Length: 147
Image (cartoon, rainbow, N blue to C red; front, side, top):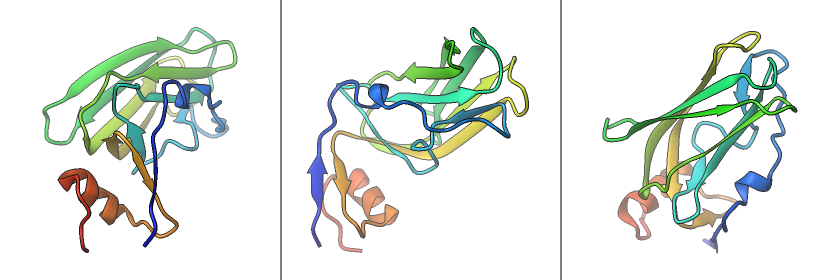
């Protein structure tokens, strides 16, 4: 099986515009940010972003938690004039099972959205046939696994 290892540089996610409009919900993550996402851990910081139905200046809160309870932090930002939001995370340890919940009080429609099973890595492993179970195994053991 062939794998391509890519390193991401500072600001890569920050330069990608949100490609998701919240036509039927109040707040949402950009389309590339969903359950099972793999994010840059450090020293470059991951950026979570999305859009909302509401008004510029609306306060946005993002809560990032680990399922084992060892990490929990709340980040705050405000909606920009184009009704997008962006939160840059702290450097994270390698590993997974984090969830992120974004919420707002001034949004029209649903005011909360959660994505789960987030994993932080130093390098991304890409293959046309690279199941999530392989990624979990590699991230947990930091070596190739035979599944």
